[in-house]
Length: 121
Image 1 (cartoon, rainbow, N blue to C red):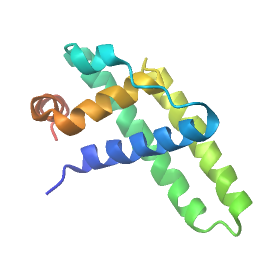
Image 2 (image 1 turned 60 degrees about the vertical axis):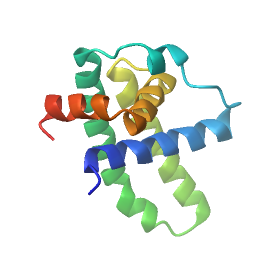
Image 3 (image 1 turned 90 degrees about the vertical axis):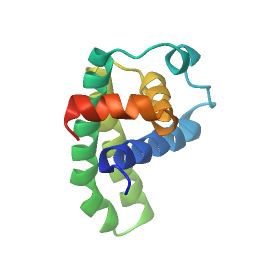
Image 4 (image 1 turned 135 degrees about the vertical axis):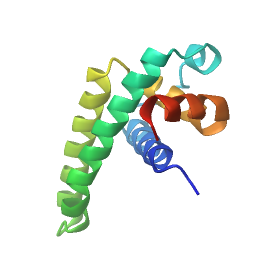
């Protein structure tokens, strides 16, 4: 069974990557975060950002699904994206840093266990 927290994070990473690609040239994630140790403090901030992002996603999911046209759906998506970016920034991460850690969580079982232990998941 997949960890719901990780599934939400994966979805957000895909959303950020897709939106970033539409807005600017694709840049590789920061290599430093994929290679260096990630502190418990960073993981706690990440968990907090993920919770806020998940809440924002839930807030806009219904209106997005009920949008009457593409333009309205895009406006809703843009508003959700802006709020998610702000949440990640408030946690102290750039989108690239956030995505780099998320990508690492997908492949690093030990890091996922640490996150789960810190969050009680």
